[in-house]
Amino acid sequence: MAWPLSATHTSLQPDGKVMFFGEFDEGDDPPRRWDPVTNTLSALPTAGYNIFCAGHSYLADGRLLVTGGHIASHVGLNDASLFDPFTGTWSRLPDMNAGRWYPTNVTLPNGDVMVLSGEINGVSDINEIPQRYLAASRTWRTMTSARLDMPYYPRMFLAPNGRLFFAAPWRATRFMDPNGTGSWSSGPSSLFGGRSYGPAVMLDGTVVIIGGGDPPTATVELIDLNVASPTWRYVASMSVRRRQHNATLLPDGTVLVTGGSSGSGFDNAGARVFHAEVWNPVTNRWTRLASNSIYRGYHATALLLPDGRVLSAGGRHARSAEIFSPPYLFKGARPTVSSAPGVVTPGTTFTVGTPEAARIVKVTLIALGSVTHSFDQNQRLITLGFTRGTGSLTITAPPGNTVAPPGYYQLFLVNDLGVPSHGSMVRVSTVAGALQEP
Ligand SMILES: [Cu+2]
Image (cartoon, rainbow, N blue to C red; front, side, top):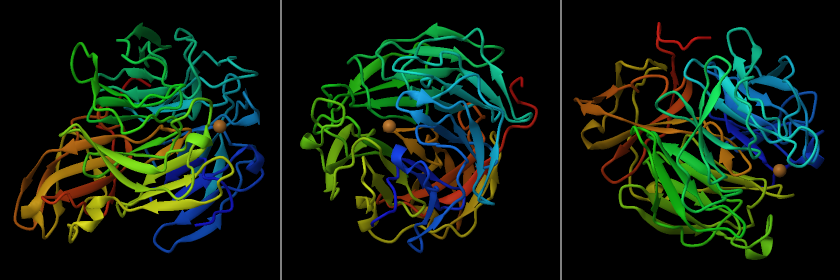
């Protein structure tokens, strides 16, 4: 599909539509919204400043928190805004402490968001002071005791123990306590080394870092943050070296990798990689899949859609998008969901109606994707336990909000052939009475 701008920043909305905005020279262009059901595009209002190079993640109520933006390369804006996908409108928040060009947002268990890093006014002039967005008061808390030099767009995750894990692209890792004014402690070093422009994903509390670096690596490592003393270990490598690629969590618990370059240098189109591949964490195997039709490297994004397909879009001056249909869409009829709750409360059980209950072998929750620069700041996958009934499943919700921070997720049922249902949009609430200190 020809698109009017490069989908450099791409987010799945709670209504199943996709919002995207473009590159530096498209900063005056309005963001767009694409409807994957009707394949139609519409323009959205502008934020009022250039949101290229911002960070973004969803709040508990489905609004998108957009932090920072672009003045020039390596020079960031201190602006922050909320985009409401239900009304299609922007609202401004108080300014942050300083500019942030390439910051990362991380959602906290109570629905607040930690914003980290981003450059202020030049190469390596990092905004070293994280800030916590306090959702209830719509204000910032400056984390004055958590100053830390970091790379831009750090690969950050909320760990099951409530700390924030800085996983990559540096070899040295860290844990951040997000409470009070914050503090850092050291974490286990990863094995390979620098992984610039390599993606990282979290499945069931395990973080997987995939390729990246210059020259790029094909290696993949994981760390299980559920255990008391986590350590990194290598798993199977990709078929080729990649940087500037994307990693997308799929409904069946596998990880899809698309695009990127095998060559040295920042964004080496001469060594572009066209073929996708998917990693199965159960078998620890990569399987080579179909190819993109154009190079999707720097400024390309990939996003799981509610129908189980994957949007692969953007790239430097790549004003187009492609749809990838994973192999599970060619393996027979899909399970159907006849009823599902709109809200899921952690620590409870809930019922989902499906005529195919007897054949369901896996149930997953995947947070809405919100991706840029080879990293999705919002996606996470949680596998849920369940029991089969007649025409329905009784599903165990996530145990708490450190495992599933509040917000919108897609719920997928997967059958014995690996075929997923369409995603049902559910909102995970906070656990009443168990909120972290504000
Ligand atoms: Cu960029």
